[in-house]
Length: 226
Image (cartoon, rainbow, N blue to C red):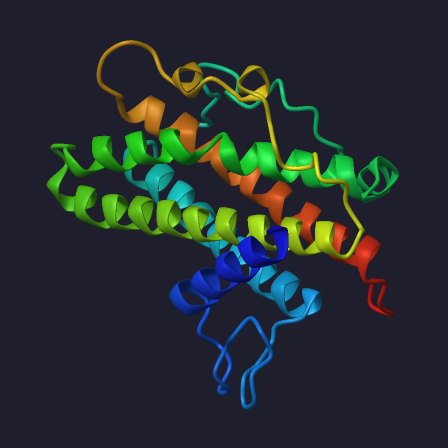
């Protein structure tokens, strides 16, 4: 049953979000099909995470220049993901081990689904006509990449379980362990400072996710450049 689920998830993920190979992609190894290896899957999610961080960094920078060109901003509140214990550097991330590092990555990505959706909705309704179309389009792009990245990480997690690299409990977070989606905003509409805080925090967390995925690949599939 687990192998069938993994095959279905892999096919959907690769067909919809990552059409980067010339050979047809399939999950059962039929003639002429490209069966993605774990290394292939890691490469794809690392590319996605790098793209997500790049777009979020650009939007954060453009947002500051447009709304707060002469201010050295300090956010109004700490990031809503502050309860997720994240390693501060490569050495600490490697000490966590594969299972704990995978859990951190999954929790970080899960914590941003609804906040990014709220950010997009708020930006698309913003009255700053010169900037809102650009910003809302970028926010939507980031949200779409996040969705695809979460699917990709799910595929990798399932494949690592099938290979015996991870235990079957990894990736299944209890409701109590999830970051409350309402923790990132106060009641009422989001304002420009809320937008700034969200973009600042997401840029930070997307950079962590990108780096952790690279470290997870290296601890799972050691290579000379690791």
